[in-house]
Image 1: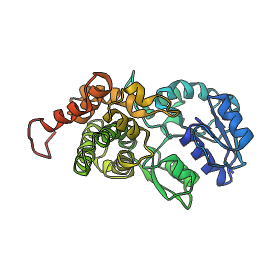
Image 2: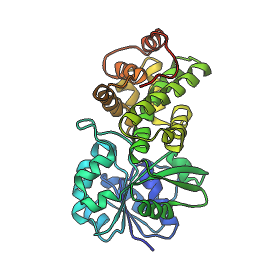
Image 3: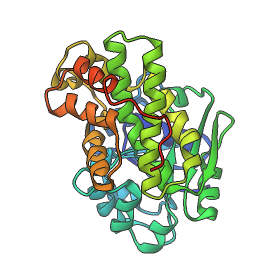
Image 4: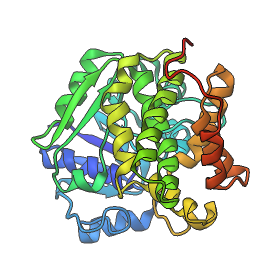
Length: 336
């Protein structure tokens, strides 16, 4: 059996820790919040982030990072994307030689515009970072925790590392496909949250199914344009990390980003829409980063621009829709 450390005890981190533990591996789950660690230890549940799921007895939750990391052959990083750099830099102090690192965080660091792969390359030993893996795809944590069928992608530049991660995570209800396109998988996983905010606004405004179909399709086009400009493979955006995750996050009621968008569409402020949320809606921070990446690369991303305007410039969701619909007519496919 493989000793596994999972860094981050939100809903997704707890779910992945439980999944691996149920396969017989000893798992230490690290929680920044000591009360969450006590709750899991005392009740075998994470009542704050994953209520109603009894966790496997082979899962131990701690609030000391050194304890979680010591002796772990596999480390799964699942912290909010804006905190990954600091947490994994600290965690690397106790990283075992030859350990496999799997990143399951989706987002782009605001200050640097780095993906999680860029962040890990900066804070981990070179050989470890080179073989790190990146998990993405359509996967609501609660449904995975309930054992409902799910398919995801694991990306790595190191094929043997990807196969090791696939073997660790694959179950009869959690199917894992390997993918060599780290950049594409990460860009798709991060930016779909921004489009999901727009999708939620469309629901809040009661714009109908036609608008939702157009939004998802054109949103995917924006994500793919940016991803290809950054070196991604076009086919990645038609796969699980691209279209699959985008569909789920834009249409599923369990999506935090969609939920925030619905509230914005119904007239709430961003502060009101996010008040009381235990988990992070990554799309809010990613909207800043995506807009900056679009400016840096010269890529046109009108949906991202309008979402940014609603979130940070006081634009109304209704005005954002009008701006999108009244843009200059053009061909669907442009040579860029």
